[in-house]
Image (tube, rainbow, N blue to C red; front, side):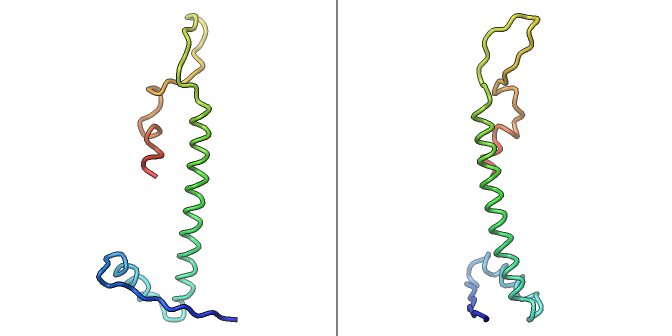
Length: 95
């Protein structure tokens, strides 16, 4: 069974113009597959982003950000916020 949907593009919107251009480049018989692949890929990316954000949040919760004073011969076992790479500190902001 096939179900039909009709697409329309708002040509005054630059994103729609770009999407229409990409859609029009597809062979007529491949356009449905192109739309299906695009939708599923977008959904998968959103889902993976959600999982990654949650994993990072959980890991950041488990990091001890303040240290007690340790004897000189005992290694420091906690992480200071300043010890983290700048890219990791702002990783969630960039997603």
